Picture 1 (tube, rainbow, N blue to C red):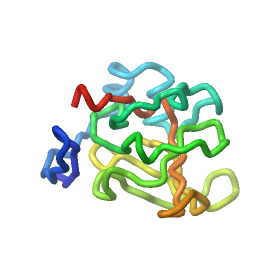
Picture 2 (cartoon, rainbow, N blue to C red):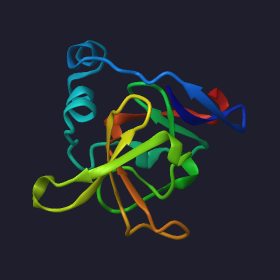
Picture 3 (spheres, rainbow, N blue to C red):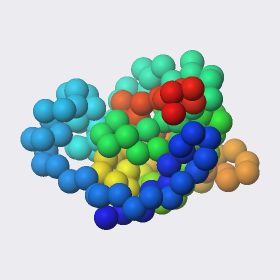
Length: 149
């Protein structure tokens, strides 16, 4: 079990939910090849290929694997990196962070707390008020307009 915060009908609620665990083969059956490569094998998409910069309506970005609420559209900003960027998650409960020593430098990897999907990385060079930049792979998330929550 894990605790997550969801945005439901305009209200935040904290819920205890089952942790989702699937094998690599199970994830491969339900995700596209690119989604699987990113979320399961810690890949990344080509910068500038995600169209989330064009999303300007209110809503929530959710995990592509388990549908956990991750980021509100109001926290999205243009970081100039080519990846969707957010300055704050829906809740720290919904994310897990761990050191990433790949590429010869120290970074902080961001994962979905419910299903352990690799989402991207977080950096300390974002805008106020948090100073955070959650640099997220667009193929690891999906957008749900507020009218459909």
